[in-house]
Image (cartoon, rainbow, N blue to C red; front, side, top):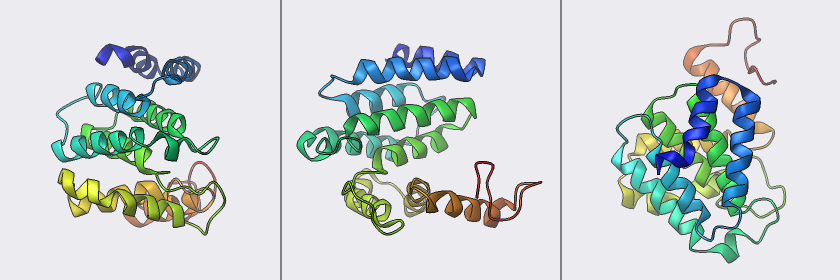
Length: 195
């Protein structure tokens, strides 16, 4: 299974963004027609982890992927927020984890956030963070059954909240400021990507 993402890993190691984008696009096309696409991507990501995985996070990722694939009528009802979207977000997030050389557990949390971030999505704008919070709450029984710790669920919630359009960027900037201080040269409450 690791060979599935060998091109993505090599592109990330080279640091060449166009090459990484090309590898991602090829993967997106490869999974488009798979009936088990979310589980296929989850297994490929798990096999490509750089070290010893956290067993509870591994079980949670597998359970969430299986739950999404088990309900294609639910998760493919929207033109954009569908199972292909979950896969594309997870693969892109993995590419970013590789580029930034994140550790195994941090990468697993990012994978889980990518899978969870739109589990509850109505296809229309909702109040800030409503769908993101609902998504984490929806999978909370799976997380508990997998043995994910409360601290990891809190980290997951923060990552999923950061995916909210608009307020997610400000939320992450404030969280970063609170934990590590403002980025040198940028005003407090901003990130390198904007306010």
